Amino acid sequence: MKLTSNLARLSLNQITTNNWNIRQAVDGCVQAGIPSIGLWRNKVAETGLEESARIVRDAGLQVSSLLRGGWFPAATAAERQARIDDNRRAIEEAATLQTNVLVLVCGPAPDRDIQAGRGMVEDAIAELLPFARQHGISLGIEPMHPMYAADRSVIVSLDEANRLVEKFAVDHLGVVIDVFHVWWDAMIYEKIAQAKGHILGFHVCDWLVPLPDVLLGRGMMGDGVIEIKRLRTAVDEAGYTGPIEVEIFNQSIWDAPGDAVIAQLCERYLEHV
Amino acid sequence: MKLTSNLARLSLNQITTNNWNIRQAVDGCVQAGIPSIGLWRNKVAETGLEESARIVRDAGLQVSSLLRGGWFPAATAAERQARIDDNRRAIEEAATLQTNVLVLVCGPAPDRDIQAGRGMVEDAIAELLPFARQHGISLGIEPMHPMYAADRSVIVSLDEANRLVEKFAVDHLGVVIDVFHVWWDAMIYEKIAQAKGHILGFHVCDWLVPLPDVLLGRGMMGDGVIEIKRLRTAVDEAGYTGPIEVEIFNQSIWDAPGDAVIAQLCERYLEHV
Image (cartoon, rainbow over all chains, first blue to last red; front, side, top):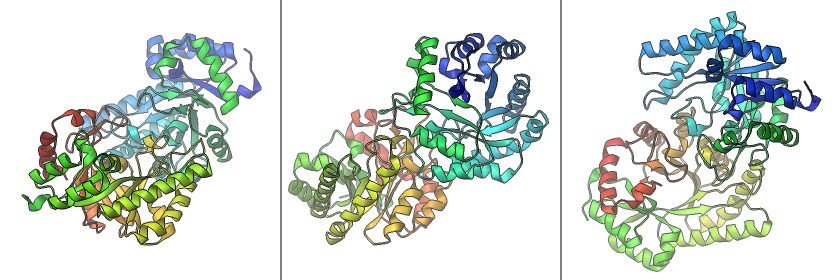
């Protein structure tokens, strides 16, 4: 495995090469000298949990995170419980895959009451935390961009995620910061500094202008308007030393050959992150 | 003119009937008993400024606002000055149209430095304010949804708009609150309360799920997930007693017959706002 020291913190979030399975993504990382990978549960299920763990371990890769838990709010108590149970399984999977972090996309409200949805997220995290800690897994709340407030997460600012973490004030709970979701925030540098000590992950991509698509229009670093280096510096200064995942939801990148995507993201990472 | 007291605060933001010219929009309001209209500069230019003013005045309508000023940040000092000059013309037009409010969509940054873009907005407002006050026109900063941070406005939260207003601490400067742009904000009710005394306008529409289009996918009140009544109550409690503009950017609503759109928005306004 070729390990370029400048790539030491780089991780491939495997959604970026969404047409690849676990083995292909792991091979792509090894070939390129990328030392870590962020795994998705649907891909792990495809290959099988034990087999996925073995492939990654044999390749000598670190698993920077498992994506994703969350999706907590629901209309009925039974459905909310089912989602918590699914998150318990995700925590067990994370432990098997030898990662430390389960990324939470907290989910939308079941109706118009977004504040109530936020309460459901808090309740679910309270219930999950002991189980997560017992398994040595940290729950990383990833605030989403506000344009996803209605269909992906009621937690839509780093401030809000920080407040939630501070409310519990325990270890094994923190935030995952993705530049795409937070770059617009006028208070972002203050909020990153306030996240000191509980940053569990850092994701990069770019914001294209115009935005090609709400979900699948994220860009390769350098192709958009996000001040990625400045945000990365702030996250570094807040004491985060862990992996930096390149996570790009983009149909045309997904349709491109994986090796070319990997080559480009390494280059762009070195230049823009 | 049929004036239903329950419609007393309703205003048609004329973008909602974008295929109509000024006369058609004014006639539509009169027919439906809508007492106010929010005018767009491009429509005013089409019909002519004096003629537009005459049509609205003869119909006995109030002009709730003129849209839109702003678009301040630019790469060069000369271009920034040209934009300020254009805003001076907008202020003069607002005075001629006998409205009190020029709505500001502040504009995107000319490059990746969004903080610098925010500084340009502040500088431009500082330069414009004396001219606006002299003409009796208030400048209403409308925070945009964060998904427009890269191409429409660097001011993307009510908190940020409030801070800007408080920094100047003068009359004739305030905020315009549009539910579409702010509904996702976990701190929105605190921020509306903090806007007390400087709320210059209130806009309604709805957030559809899934979002059909970043710009032209806004919904009719009641068709989406925004708690409009709750937000309206908060705005009322913050002391705002002015017009409530229905402003809907939506291609299929634009393509529908204007009278039908007006009839529906009156009904939805009474039910959902």
